[in-house]
Image 1 (spheres, one colour):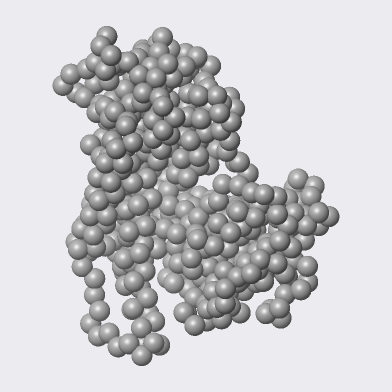
Image 2 (cartoon, one colour):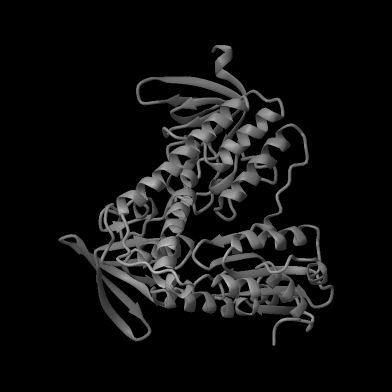
Length: 468
């Protein structure tokens, strides 16, 4: 084996967790290779997930805003229409630009990129094949960062045309007349909003009694009511029991407490979650342990039961989020060289990028109570925020959860335009163990949407200044 096939670290998978891990390994002086089977780096997030969906969300937000609110601003738009092909072209351009940027960044940081599919063959070795040729490589540490894939329901198999998953849902060549979304999580709500804004009749079917189970009921209900006002319809506490596909459409049988009903659609987007992408990696052959859901078992240093094989991101336990995978990658790299890498999994924020955005971090009031923690809460409606009123962003609210005894911030939930940016303030305060009082005493510029966080924190102590 030649020197160019021997590395200190080989990272398999070039998504956010993998390429960030590879960069950090190279920064720490490790000879590092990054293996990716697809033609473009970035993984699911960049290619068919986070980035293209946000590009579509932004484009359709502009269209929806002009269509529904421009006249209130004294802006008259006649015969407004969209060009779906141009919209998709812009989305693809954003993805391509970022993909090239990631490749240039990784290369400049000193990481060797290897094209092909990797398979572990034991004793610190792996085989990489691009379909034409293959080679054997070795490393002291092999890091699995192969991400996740859409979960398929046995009675709703994907055909890529009528029954689709999120990869298909970002690339329709025409707007569906009727679209059923199965699952009211982040992916279902985001893509449901994209196609609803473009004219589709979108109905969301959710097995649970409310959307967004990570939120308290009052916050989740507020978010749902806003989405209903925008045109989405919801069937909650409802499950899909069967489907028939014929002549380019699907008929679903839905069951709730009142019985069974049928509903037809030309597109059915199944968005019931994602599972670890661990097939064909040679894990079983070399004895890597996995749990009942196919996730790779690791210890606190991301080490599997096989020496020299580690795993990060979506293939291990924890939220399947790009930013969580990145933090895993950095911590894993630092642990390899003996540093104290650390990830605070209690403070991984979650965001749903609808409008208004839905963001949360830490414990909800219900979760805190279930843990036996006595809490105080404070809420603030965006309708009482001056900047929100001036910019037409009055839908939503902020809720703060604090320990009743110590005042320590335990969690925050936000339904507001720009919630994805606002939540960082809560994470920062909670990272150092800050109290609701610390947030309440933090000076926020006026007029800004961020003042709503301060007001919610004040309200937790009954001192709200701008709420009734």
